[in-house]
Image (cartoon, helix red, strand yellow):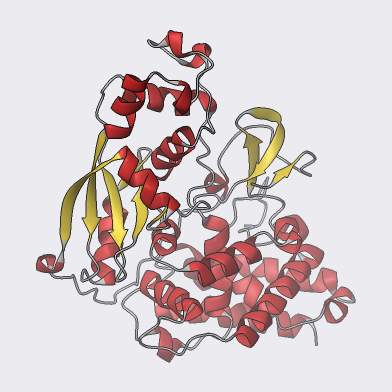
Length: 398
């Protein structure tokens, strides 16, 4: 987990980074969306003991995706209360796993609960009386310090797991995951993509979203206070919003409307691009190491240019006479970042003020505003915002 003691421009509250990014109307305009067949759902329900689950985690048969939902780092008190509930015999809410073709599982809902259980059974969490409500006599104890009866009761406790089987089509899985609640909130689209992805895309998007140039361009939007140490800060994925921004840049850098129209929605397009990074796309060729290196270089350049030219206005709507800057807008991020990626810093510096004025003036155009706020997944609106931003930038640099 990345900590930073001196976050520049850090907010004084603990608002999640996700709250500082525009909600996105990704509708496809008047495009017809074909519903999937409910008969294709394949879900089984199984019971596991906690000992079985922890053993499978050790064997990498259950993937906790340790960076999934990183912003939901539970406080010590939350972890202890969960452990106490198990020791009291209180059933835990059901878990959701996604089963892969090799019979391994990815945890879709229940990451923090299983992480807590694994920590405790590996003696990496000590119970404290201040956090216990009923079992205060367990103060200072770890798992192996418990009496034999308590240890047996804990490891033998069972959880109910709903398993989405491999033969369930991806579009059906996406919808199922979107209906699953995690900590009371529906999974975000990027959390779902992450849950269904592999190490190459996870690592690549994480790397891009943790570049210093990205932190700078987004005004360190993706940090928050560390739960157990309010004086320090932890990188906050914003419900994986930072990785979605990185993914959108990659997916739209070489945009083709004809290719885009082959997909049922913006989400489907982004999901398949994720598969391209993982080398699993059935409709497009995978990305080579050279391709990924070039994407990283372009992304880094785009972020550097955005911070230099647009500063605090980067990736945000800025209506005329606005009293303060708004949140990061995903559609604006796509348009500005992909446009700025095509220039070196030297090309922009001499006309920085002109470029900034040109890009901000786009928010006075009705069609442009519609393209970044309503039906942003509509192919025509995607094309308009990407093309219009590049045109305005090129005109300013003449």
